[in-house]
Length: 283
Image (cartoon, rainbow, N blue to C red; front, side, top):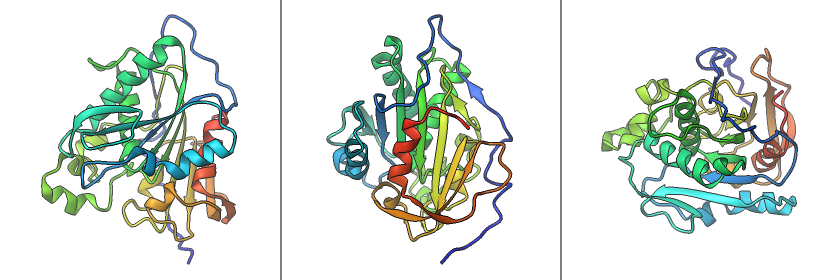
């Protein structure tokens, strides 16, 4: 059943702050519509400290492939127990800071792609969205140990706890650092830029669901993204990366918008993620 909530003021954190990385000496890749970008997929937090990247992302990668995507679909893993990942940052546990994982991701993107002038898109689920948000924040700040720049054209987050996760309270009782960092008001969350951008600019799309029991509908869109989508059709946390079809949803385009669209039957989160990676426009 549709539930309305007054979240206009809470959907944007820290005003309209945008933090952009310094551009390198050579020209950045051009922004353009197309299906040729490499897409990097980042999984979410796991209480078991492992994820099978192929299985985790099977529905999403199938959506991209079936739509004729020609760019490579690359999976980034970070737990020591992860399997079937194209890029693996080894040795991570639930006690490894999300910021440390973001640093590893930033350096992988730079050394594999950006240094060669190649741009990438990113699709992330749950905590994975905090990994890329942290990576772009620190690169833009020029933090030591991070690359001088990266080229990330589009980012899509699915059920990411931008303002904290509902499960982080009990999870933090285990003393796992990642759970503590995902608690609302944590120093980690407070240190993230409201909308970090890469050296070529970055178009952000954030999706949430009113039926997500792990990350509520407000937290999932609580950053200064150019595009926000909310579902109210029984999509749970996992289904934001697995459900196909059409669902009741509303959207908000551009960070300066003052109202959400009317509720209506719209494409599901997998299709929206693919569309967000295809289009280059930031409005």
